[in-house]
Length: 372
Image (cartoon, rainbow, N blue to C red; front, side, top):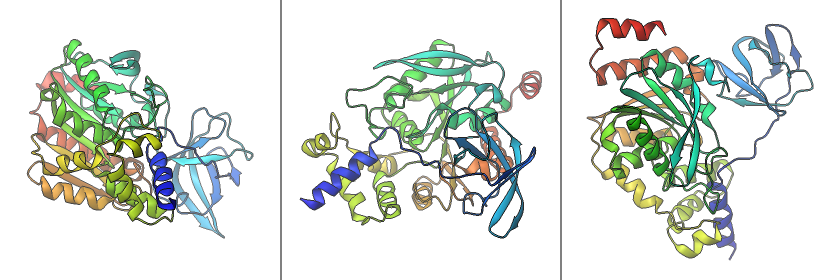
């Protein structure tokens, strides 16, 4: 009974659509262009990050390390929101902007009609038939993908930044839980249908974490998959058992608990005890992603130190589909923080892969795209 109770608890944690956040970072000193923190693994990480404040609003944007002395680190303060003070409590994050106009000025809010109802989305329609669809990960929201939207815009792509069921913005299912990509992919399929109605013919899907799972499921299951010409996957969830084992280890639980949950979710009784409306066949889906044929090019951008979604799984996936998959390794500390550690390298990798995927545009059209 103890093992079963532990498995149910772990399953509920794994299928929670939102996460409880810890705001445990307190500024020690703030000036117009610098900010000081206690030295820790995240506050010492090289790159550009967001400090999400507990009271909400736009994040403070934290730049490179300036100095380290007596257990305190001073960093550049690239953007100081009105609410930031010495009394603030913050959370270290890869999200550096919550405003879609930071990626492009011509963004509009629209709704994509999904099987469960309308889901809000941001649209940047550049008048081209080639689109990027951006899909955030579990427990996050559309703002997570803005780092990729900027890159897609520079390449002249129209963009659709989607929400989906149970993510806090999209429609709710009856159980209001994450289905680990097993039902959410239908909302990505709905986004493809929306793009097709706008005249889109070819799509690149940028999938972040669970968003990558959804993208692969759509490629394998949707009748509209022919529209998807390539995938950019950031810290992708490729094997749920690996992820659940890694998260069990991080929570100082036995790793076999993760394996047990991955298998038990396929059984109706266990899934219902875990709050799910239906079983989740995640293990068979994992095998299909590895063993099934891959017909389109894939770029994986992944941090080798990712404690939540193991980098080793991306390595194995690349070897299993080596003719069509490219893996770019980053050396940083957080999940989905590859761009933050090296935005120039991230954007160059995406652009090089994209230019190999599609032939160059006509000179006039390319110049117009570059000028945006």
